[in-house]
View (cartoon, rainbow, N blue to C red):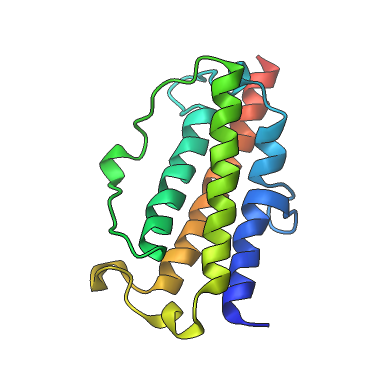
Length: 156
């Protein structure tokens, strides 16, 4: 199997359908979560909604580069989102998240193998492979937080 297909499958596992690493994925954790639970604050922790939007922010930023655009995302803005105030807003966000993540995975699948070792935007950011791997690891990190926050919120 091509490396790009393997990497795309790893990304799809954390977002859509995997259970091998964390025994869950974003879709399992978020799809049946009501907006009020997703936006419930626990102490100083980020909400489930903020963490999901944070991952979506990075998926979109990297996806833009994959499509030939510029890298416009900035860490300082990666937690700045308008509040989600209804179930409709939450479901709209989730639909964008799933669609953008599917497009991200598709762009990886279509990527020529040699692109993986090429510089991503600027040498200081490493290669395309490093950025895709970082996106997957970053997603698992915040998925773990979402699982724990969900447990805390449902026990309150």
